[in-house]
Image (cartoon, rainbow, N blue to C red):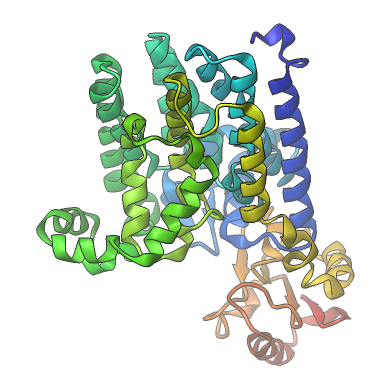
Length: 461
């Protein structure tokens, strides 16, 4: 498929339709005040500050944006905010890049000499994989933009295109520090499974070097902390180095965390949508996915064991490559496109959170109008204290702080606006905390209650 007939090609139509659906769904969730500070406001605030030539210090996170995950790609995204600063750029980028993954999937399938119909079916199965829909709803994460890049990296290997391969992995690494593990593991697969030593060494060396630079230099310098997530493996040590050493020195502890019913359930979740095309004989590409899968198994953090969050995303490209390899060898439980698509549809409606739009996302509809009205009165640049669910709507400013657990004693005089929703206080908050803050505000003559309706309160200096 070339660019000339891309728009009329079935895969081009799939990508366009998918982009529109994903963009509308994430935008609608945001409009309903279901997006949160963690992680949408973090990235929106950091990117906005970059676009304004300011230091991207995310106040409520307490670190420079590069101290989060060394995601240099955010500086490139900031160019869009220079055109017009809007969080909807992030929703669009997320929707289009997740959808664009279907194009190199099709190209890889064709390169494996599968028929056009079969290649199109695999592309659709990728788009219907529940994680694609679910992660699109979970705020914004730069690593979603790596989906097409992973496939293009493999395609570049198959075409012996070193430059294209190098650019793809550099792009991937610019999106998140932890992806360096996947890139290094991909190098091992390319050396052992694909017999592409040159490509494998490039991937392995760049992955290891970037892991060391990101975790030992960039993140500590810009955050003053260890790499995010280290605490999730605290049972193995208090630092990244300790944890890595104890993976080998304390096998008993490691195995006790790996072999659990919870992990078995997680494994079923990630494999079931594509189980018809996953034959062990062709599992070599999963070498690339193993480190992320292992880390997800090792932790007790449930967010790393579902199809809702970003932690399983680097596994998906290699599952798809296994499916392509299996079908190219004439294997697979299903060999007819209609059965593949039917299975994917069943998995999608069973595991994708489509139902959230008529249940979970409507929980605060009774205060929706009041919150919208209050937002129209909030100052455009002043320091603000608000809930985690409102924060993504006011993150284009230097200081945003959250009314969450532990903030009951926060210094209030630093703010120009304080916007609270007592009835629906948002993530990690409570009506009691809101009451405490309102009582404290009432003692300060600097603030006036400028808006109150349906338990939504706006205080301003």
